Amino acid sequence: YEGLSRAVSGMIRHLDAMAPRSYTRLFSVFQGIDAAIRGSGLRFEKPEPTAPFALPLDRLPPDSVASAGGKAANLSRIAADLDLPVPKGFVMTTRAFDHFCEVHHLQPMIEAALAGVDIDSPSSLQAASDRITSAIRGAALPPDLEKAIRDVWPLTFGEPAAVGIESRDAGIKRCAVRSSAVGEDAAFSFAGQYATVLHVETGRVGEAYKEV
Image (tube, rainbow, N blue to C red; front, side):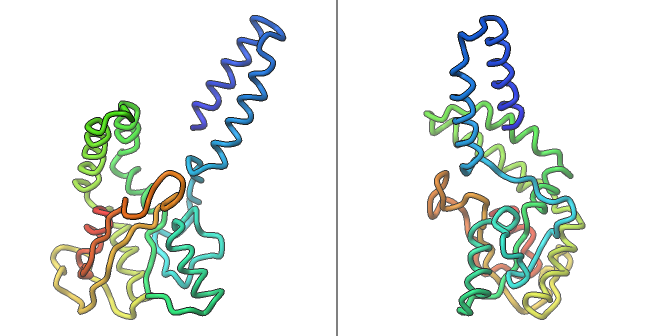
């Protein structure tokens, strides 16, 4: 969005230079539109480069929507502020997803798929979705994200996790892997849009994470 914003702002400046005082109102109109977009669900903050890849719910900072998504952040606050019972769990942060995309160079492909979407065509939307999800499912979980899951599991559930395929049957606990996207259940999404994977063994958490 930053590139688009700069490009539109530059176009207005050039128009004003070519015909002084003819396009003055465009500046205020653009500023209003820009402010509205930046205050909406289209504005996503870049994760801190030193942020953890994974955190237990009870260790999330107070204002963690941008790093953990609204669902996880609200569960954390319910437990901390209201002392209500909340299921144990941990969050794969937005930095983890950014890192996953960077390792596999997925961002250019995602942007290209979205740029070609015809929002009035269900088949076009489905084709872009299939292309993006297939690329994510087909990419291996980076070793440092596997380690993050292994490390956060005992902090959350009190027992070690086995992330690798060779240890898939290790451990006795299962979990549900649910979405907690930034902007989820808000103006640009709806309940039931995101996947949930149930009865996930410790060794399958990484695959379920990619599925969700």
